[in-house]
Amino acid sequence: MHFALSAEQQAFRRLVRDFCAAELAPRAAAIDRDAQLHWPTIQKMAAIGLLGLQVDEEYGGAALDTLSASIAIEEIARACGSTALSVSAHNGLGAAPIQRWGSPEQRQRYLPLLTGGECLGALALTEPGAGTDLAGGVQTRAVVEGDSWIVDGQKAWITNASHAPVVVTLVRTDPDAGTRGFSLLLIEPGSAGFTIHPPERKMGVRGSPTHMLSFENVRVPTASGTLGERGRGFHQTMQTLDAGRISIAALCVGLAQGAYEHATRYALERQAFGKPIAQHQLIQAKIADAATEIEAARWLVYAAAWRADEGLDFAKQAAMAKLKASEVAERVCHDAIQIHGSYGYSSEFAVERIYRDQRLMTIGEGTSEIQRLVIARRALAESQG
Ligand SMILES: Cc1cc2nc3c(=O)[nH]c(=O)nc-3n(C[C@H](O)[C@H](O)[C@H](O)COP(=O)(O)OP(=O)(O)OC[C@H]3O[C@@H](n4cnc5c(N)ncnc54)[C@H](O)[C@@H]3O)c2cc1C
Image 1 (cartoon, rainbow, N blue to C red):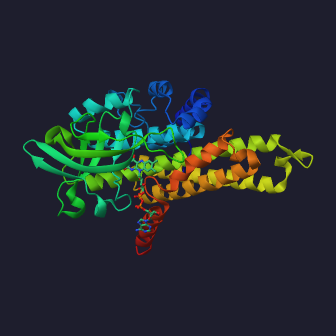
Image 2 (image 1 turned 30 degrees about the vertical axis):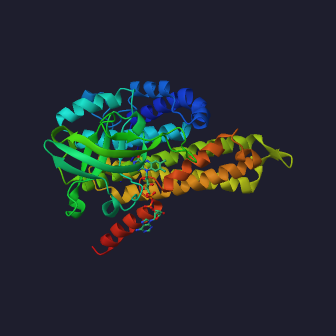
Image 3 (image 1 turned 180 degrees about the vertical axis):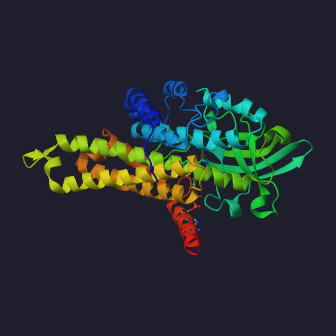
């Protein structure tokens, strides 16, 4: 594989990095403390394409390749984990399925809203009783009555739902049809019977809103509210999650990079035994390991994104990137606190926040256990020829 970032990709990274350094990094502590996104910054993100990373230009998107989209999420996460999670979910989970499977009318109705900076996209898969095992556990049902679906059930842990003009929702439409018995519906908040519960109080990514949803006899027009074909919802979900994993992996690289930069700066300043702690070899070992691991994770993200952009199968590489990058973020953030000593345990220092933010990443959009199963299944199939 011959590979290098293009001049455009490098310029885009600089643009997003400068934007995040000026607009986002100084606000990250407040976003976490107040458990609120900073909307003026989100609106400015729309102006530089960050809210329509892979949406067509005719709907206000930037129509970027997957690699550029990953670079953007890495840079946002380097500055603020909460904002990165909401922007990643918005692009990869909320907007992407509508861009991919929406009818011209559905795209026209929702995508300009999503790219405009006033709202964020959401995808509702998880339920109180089903996260990993969606096929076996999803209870939310939709039945046809006249020209509408009638939806009943609950969803849990849904990012951005309170800011979404529409929630892409996985429902069971044909209970006896196994994985062919699911559909994705477009459900608008404000529909009678649709309740978005107050935000969850979380350990990390506290600025990113996460909600429980309830549906009680919610009426959704079958013609305009079914995304793609009836019965394809499970398949659409798996495809969306494969691509979403590249984005979450990029987010992990950004969190790790941010923590690493805070730790190296601190190590150069903090004195112990008459010299900066950066001159003690055991601190250098942590810095060397972090730099190496971050670089390895970043290249796995690039490889998965490159395969996606080339139209090659990328499910195994996306799982590898997400598994590796989330575990690297965990280790690097752990060591970043260690390098800070007691100060790393204080909310006055960014590494404390980043450590809490990264903890989600081995869980959301497929746990590490599931990434290992995906990788093993494919690796074993390959070795059988
Ligand atoms: C902050 C946050 C934001 C989120 N945003 C969204 C969102 O926008 N949309 C959405 O739909 N969901 C969202 N989620 C939900 C998230 O995707 C799920 O929590 C995740 O998929 C895991 O599901 P679960 O929590 O039900 O865990 P479970 O499925 O109950 O798993 C519990 C444990 O069992 C393990 N396990 C399960 N099955 C196996 C197996 N076969 N082999 C080995 N181990 C197994 C898991 O790996 C895990 O360690 C979010 C969650 C959080 C915390």
